[in-house]
Image (cartoon, rainbow, N blue to C red):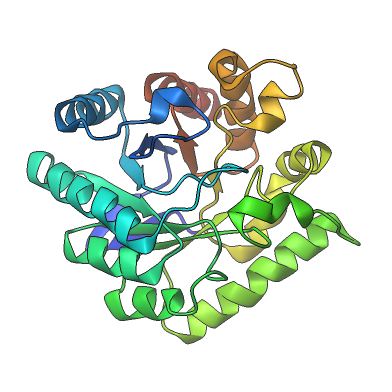
Amino acid sequence: MKKSLNIQGRILDLSHPVVMGILNITPDSFFEGSRFMDNESLFLEKAAEMVRAGAGILDIGGYSTRPGAKEVSATEEKARVVPAVRLLKARFPDLLVSVDTFRADVAEACIKEGADIINDVSGGDLDERMFDVISENKVPYILMHMRGKPSEMQNHIQYNNFLTEVCRELQYKVSRLYKMGVSDLIIDPGFGFSKTLDQNYSLLKHLRLFEIFDLPVLAGLSRKSMIYRFFNSAPEESLNATTALNMFALTQGASILRVHDVAEARQTADLFVKLSNS
């Protein structure tokens, strides 16, 4: 499996798992602890905390994709995330910054400000220009599996053969991107997106299936509903279970953990490396 990414000539080594910290510039993300809206000093303070805790990448989002979240215009999303990227790059010039957006215009504007990676929950489905922007700018792209729009994605959970169809839908897009000259790709199976609780656990159990792509795999499990609904609890009570599932994801080949709690994920990844080398 590919264990590196070329980021504008900088090679990111993925032979040891990388932790991606989540920073949402939204008022309504599902986990309150990840929201940093209209408070520049708090935003930079949280970013610095994540960097100190071992985040290799910070993922910035200005559009909540939780079911029922309010629609955000492209203008508003851009007004949120572009200044955030600019701030991070000014304060932490060596930090790798990912932007969580499905809009090509937002991605393009953020790349101009120094964004290193684009993280698209729709896998190019919600903006036909996205693949062109990625190809033209030669930035790594996180290709996630989802059906439909975030607001109604749970209406698209009917599969004839769940795992086969997820792989097939991703393979079609990987092939398109390869033909466009994009080779630095990361596969995100899309935990929690267009999937039932049981489908999510099947996806995690069979995560090694995605080795067929010979690409790094990102696991985004942090405090998601597949955890707190299983325990009839809440996102705020889901850190311990998140850690358990993150360790399992690493044993199944995940290279990147996308998390709200960086220190705990970094410890999990370091312990995994220690066990693997023992």
